[in-house]
Every structure is written in C-alpha cells, then in structure tokens.
Amino acid sequence: MSYKIKQNKDLCVGCGGCVTVCAQNWKMDGPKAEPINITVEDIGCNQKAADVCPVKCITITE
Ligand code: SF4
Image 1 (cartoon, rainbow, N blue to C red):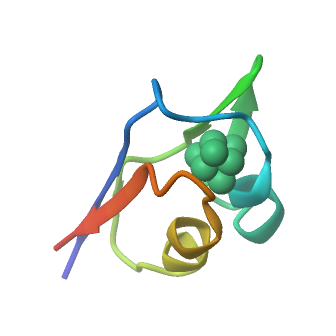
Image 2 (image 1 turned 180 degrees about the horizontal axis):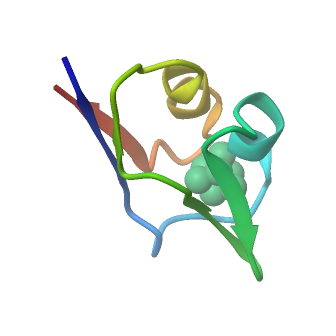
C-alpha cells in the first residue's frame, strides 16, 4: 500500500506543526512547509501532520 500526500500550499500558514510532528517527511520552505516525499509506502507520521494542521491543508489518499 502506498499513500499520496497532498498539501494545498496556498493555505499553509507556516505554523510548523507538521514539521514538529513529522520531520521525516515535512520541512519548511521559506514561510511555508512542504512534504519531502509526496508518495510514501508507510503513512507513518503523515497522519499526525494532517491532524495537527490548523488549516487542514494536508490530505492523504491511498
Ligand atoms: S501544519 Fe499546516 S499550516 Fe502548519 S506549516 Fe504544516 S502545512 Fe502549513
């Protein structure tokens, strides 16, 4: 099973929450965050990143 990580970067407010809970797959890119890999074999901490995001701009699909 692999998962696609999507982020609506326009909505990102750069709070850094996703990076804090999931540094394995999220990094800051200037004032906004972005995923390091958009396809992952293991959902890992990406669900935590989606859950913590205050603007709910991260979605995960199988
Ligand atoms: S948690 Fe959401 S709003 Fe905050 S930096 Fe990550 S993607 Fe952006």
